Length: 496
Image (cartoon, rainbow, N blue to C red):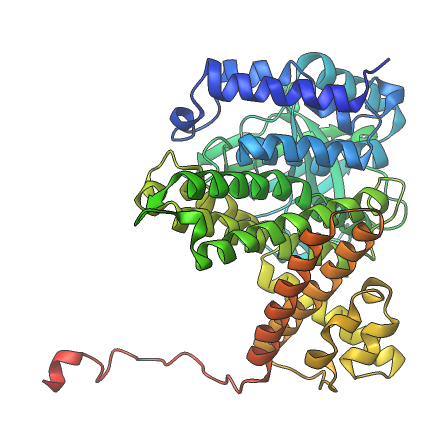
């Protein structure tokens, strides 16, 4: 029988504080590659990953709200630690709980609970990043085994994970690769399932997490192949969309830390006989982080009711992309703001704001770069507009489920007809606009349940300002392109 989650998370937060601030110095090992094994052991002894293991297998039951609160608790102290949990939860444990053969689950979950094992996901290849469907890693069935071969890279927990979910495409009799995607559970403790790390990367942020290039040449028993409910591509979309809907959990703790650090520093710092917090611009800057905190909270609130493994999220791209792209932009902005407010102190390696700039920067790139996700939001909404033959943005959003509460706040900016044949840069502008309006819908849903109104009122003002600026950018001509041979006739000193 598990203790109440509120007690469990309180104890876990106390453990993190103890590990990072009493027993070890987080500022010291944040400068070094990987987390010291003793620190990781003390954290994992609390079984944080039990939140993503079904009750039937001894876990806490894969409840989304518990997973998100666990990620937030970790990211308040350490964003890399939270990402480590996020990789395990969204990219390994939840897919296994949902799609693995029942015969193989028991032992996997047992090892996570009793031996603190970890798991990751291998999709990205050196020549195929966002174009995952073009992957060249292939599998061939020989008897009761699948031979899986290829090269994968930029996998978080490279050389550290005990299990990997490996994506590949089946090779047919003609030697061609199938269009569909297969997922295999690879257990690196087995002799014929060892992954060779060809190179470790010197990643720019997230020092605690090892990344690198992996050579895959393994033999996996057929019962360790995931079993899609329809197609492998739909399964991959379901997994990735669920993962994107968990980004707000990682974001929330991080943004809250940026907010708390900003308020503390600006209360203590005296400039010209005044607290920094008394300056008008500083009040505005802190209000932007509070707005980010409100939005991330609302996304967690929404995700808790919508993204459980019992739901099929393959078609939830608009919502998933909105959460991932917008909340990671907010993380980066919060880190930039704290660093700016901290002055010269923000430029020290041990400053959590400065470090947070690099740690959160990767979040805007991995699992789909934000420009790509904003473009996709616009493409998906244009498809729906064409189906309804409604090209006035305001009129369309009035009837659209994800904006039914928020559309009216933006009427003065979006009451116009849009041409759906747009340049990509304009698609990105519009994708950002849509993501803000959808996010306010989440905020309003949460406010109806009792979330404090002064925070939501500030959030509404800032979102209207943001949308106003984005619509101005969208309406500007902006046809500039890069100039080839820019070096010719462009050295300033020739004109003196």
